[in-house]
Length: 280
Image (tube, rainbow, N blue to C red):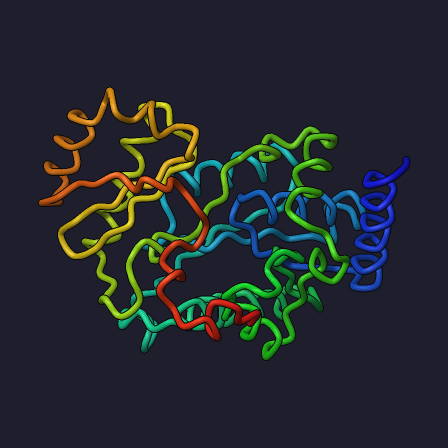
């Protein structure tokens, strides 16, 4: 390999070295692009007997994502468990502070670490990547405090490289749209409730069924602000009345389309610059 491919090859070799040093790992597995690649790399490097994938099933995790995670783990031949969790029961989480993800990840690790210890896995790993540094990622702080490792980040692997290598490995997630928990659709400081999460899930699922792959429905009180890929904005207009009617049925009073289109973490845009750049 040469150029960028050579760089990816050396990074993947570093990833394998990191995993071999760990020996046995529990993988926090959401079924997304990054955790799927991490699970595949762990299985190929350590073997199925040394890897356990665990998926946390909660109010913030859409049913369609869980189904995809279960199917993917099965296709990879990975030992896999789905465990029930509830972010809304975490003290401080429902108030939706700017470090909400810290509470979420800390609770996730509260579940995964005891399972790993009981089953003889010395390490818990999750899918943080090099791109996450310099962004608002409070979950990284929780991982650091709990001794949870991020092999992809440690190897310096970026999202574009993960997609490239995933395609080479035949992973169906290579071009899967980025996903974040449903709570990320609610502005900081606005209470997170089971009803709001259900409304968001129903609205996004409906728009996806119309053929849109990258979708966010940001909920501002009784207003839904729809984000789709900028290249798909024109495609949404012909079905605008259908979408409006469905979202009204779900419970929204107002339905709007964000003219800038989808961008990751758009609700972070109103945070002070010091918090937008926070890498933990």
